[in-house]
Image (tube, rainbow, N blue to C red):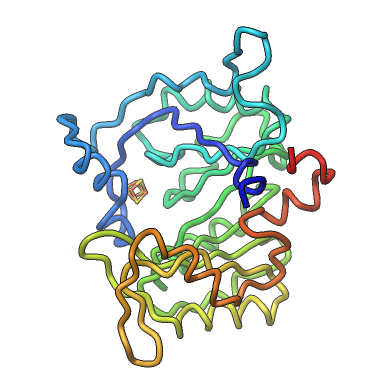
Length: 267
Ligand code: SF4
């Protein structure tokens, strides 16, 4: 397991975000800021000291982020956020320069993508994975038709926090490399029903799209009973359900497993 986690790292070039849809109600960025007693509002977006992290070097002149990592990008904000428009071109430049890394971001603002992609994007940078988040049917019906049309080489659908039963079959084609489903965490979290998760899985299996049940969330409803699941067990409980489909390795994106030689992501 430690080897597997070792392929991941984070890059948070800016911090803070503005809520945009129902899935944002209990945004973990806001929760974390509150927990740490931040005196800056979470909606106030600012560049972080880690802005240049992908191109920073260590004393021995190697990059601080070694080759082959999956870099979770902008997980304390959102990469396509309006407030970050002045900073994003430089971020794209770093992403392009570090073609030896995978950059993976999730977004609820896929409708902005065409307006803010880099001029030389073409049919997509090969090292960028984008997860389009859909928490309910309304957002699936709004975001996924847009997502479907975009030139992005690695696409996933993030059905999290899953707030209701959703039908996405009509948006699943072989450009979608993975659908991940998960419940909501934190105080006041809305419950996630196992039936909704199983339905998504069924829709994926029918189209032969990889499916991952990522986490249960804090309140998980199964067979009519609501279970309170501690944060530390939410991932492992989902994994125990053993319903992932065509996911080769635990928490390794399928893109990574077929694009890289084994020794790259096991180091
Ligand atoms: S878009 Fe994401 S980071 Fe921004 S407020 Fe919503 S949940 Fe939080």
